Structure formats: structure tokens, C-alpha cells
Image 1 (cartoon, rainbow, N blue to C red):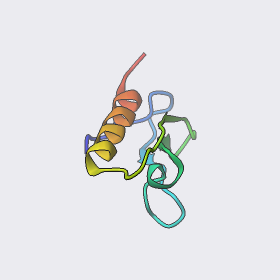
Image 2 (tube, one colour):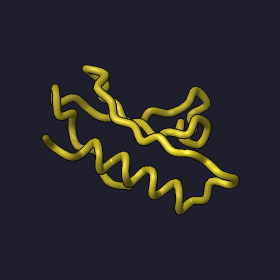
Image 3 (cartoon, rainbow, N blue to C red):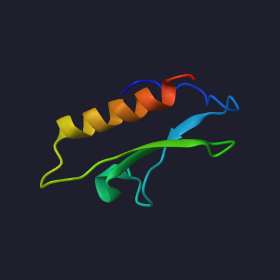
Length: 73
């Protein structure tokens, strides 16, 4: 998994938004989200799950979420 850059708004530490049971939210809710510990800024990738969610699809969603978070305006 690619390294997350600090928050583009406040410089705080970024983290993956995980479900209450410790699993990645996208495995449960159809989205991948990264957020800032400090200012709560976030980015998410929403997708539709059709059938079994494969490891390849999980990697694609994770990669896209990291790309969106790490880009700078």
C-alpha cells in the first residue's frame, strides 16, 4: 500500500477510515476513506460491489483513495 502524505490542509497525520470491527470500511460499506487525525478532512472513493470483492479490486480502490488523498491542489 502506498504511503499517505500529511493532510494538505493542516499537515496532520492521515489514517485509513476503518469499520468498528477493525476491517476496512470499503469491505462493508462500498467506499474507501482516508481522514486526518487533526482536522477531520477526508477523501473517499465510492464504488458498487457486484458479487465477490476480489483482492485485485481492493487494491484498485485503495490505490485510487491514496492517489486522491496524496494529490496537491
